[in-house]
Amino acid sequence: MPALIVAYPRKADTQFDESYYAGAHTDLVKQTWGPHGLTGAEIHFPADSAQPYAAMVVLDFSGAEGIDAALGDPATPAVLADIPNFTNAEPLIYRAR
Image 1: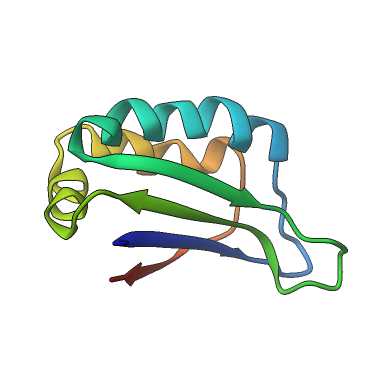
Image 2: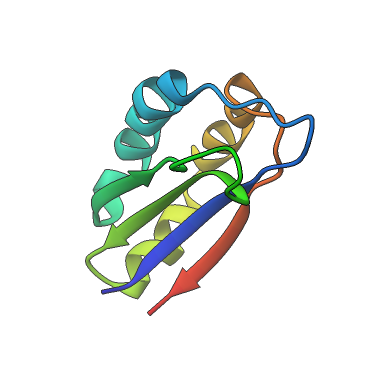
């Protein structure tokens, strides 16, 4: 299943608001990308502070063309602009087939 995997690397000064991310930000992602075939958002938070990422999410899409459409959506910049509301980490984005 086509997916975007977004990981937020943890550094010594990384801040991450898990509640905001799992609530408001994920709702924004679903609202913006749902019409493009987003079928699921599986969020993973680390088991302990020794893990290299503050959070990861697997965003499943019904097709690769949906990922293209989602990334090209005029509202996607608002999704990206929301990142500083929950973290100071720079996300890594991996596209899976």
